Image 1 (spheres, rainbow over the protein chains, first blue to last red):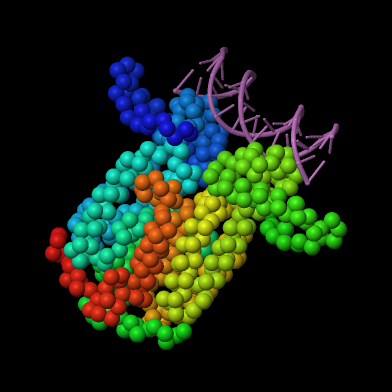
Image 2: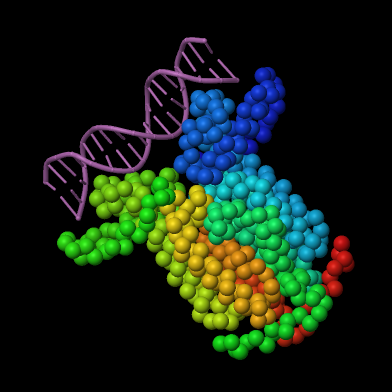
Length: 243
Length: 243
DNA sequence: GTCTATATGCTGATAGAC
DNA sequence: GTCTATCAGCATATAGAC
């Protein structure tokens, strides 16, 4: 986990000889990666043992080391997989130039990812928590570029008066934090939900609530439950009364 | 880290004999706990070694084991410390019955904690990420009760029309996620800030942005930058135009 | 490609002199 | 209360038969 190693070394897929990655190898790697994601999410890099991962994958430990020479290489592959999913969601930000549509789409996508890939999100959170020993490169390149370009988009929305003048960076952090919370802290959420995971209906309600608060919070739509074009806030005279 | 051990075993402070915890012991425990918080935050429970903690505390490893018999006992003490800080912030929720004042105070307090105790927040995040092996009891008792009572408060705000009808639970999660993000993901935030931590001014701006979006998002105040009592959203006719 | 047996190194914890 | 030396256990990784 040195952090300075260059990544992507695995992208050069087409090696002349014994390539083609026999179907059996591809399948075994898939099974191992899936098991590894779960175990790394549950226990962290050091807390996970290759024995645990091998057991969950249903193979002997030595076999795991045949496919992935070291635990660190395996971990790196898992983290890179997460990052690709993250990039996929990132694109939905650009589906429209309208702030309501773009943000609704982006938030929905990120919430869906939290529900579909909670383990991946946890591995990512763990990695950032520990100062990104493996994916620091990504943070400084891809993530930094993506963020800067989207900050520019949001600034245009502000300049054209379509949303309130908030600092775009902190809006993005808010979206990341809130959506990923449903994956990273799902154990806490489940516990507060009586020990059971959120139902599909509850999750959709959470998604609506998150989207609604953020869109109303930046002045893109009226607050939930208030008529779209009606007199916006009867409670505007709230100040001082209750105190 | 069995998770089923009862907690609070340490609360029975007043043991008859050799008590009084000589000043030297108190001081050493303090130094060790501080070092432990940092190392556990950085590396997780398993990733942290007692050697690392002892080094950071500036004492021999054997000395650490003299004060804290096992690594797990030390970890538990660190987590309990975090939880007490969390409880302290929780109280600021009740400073007023006015939603604007109560939420502003609560959010500010949680943001300040993220800045003052980022390591503690990270240990907490790590613990939840790994399904709370040590503090599951707290989640099911103190946290569950606190949440239920505050949900009731928010529901009263909704019933009296002071805020929009959103689901209180998801509002709370949003506040937790967003405020704690500034501690747990501070490495990512720093990286996107050119590798430097947020300045005091930037952090205050973040705090204002977070508070503003949430309060406006639930209809408690108008969106930032719009006159408090003025015509609220000229951009209400935004739909369809740009698309 | 699979799998048992094993080498090697590290870590939590203790013994016991000071 | 402090600290050096050391033990016992465990986890990564490999050797080598099949």
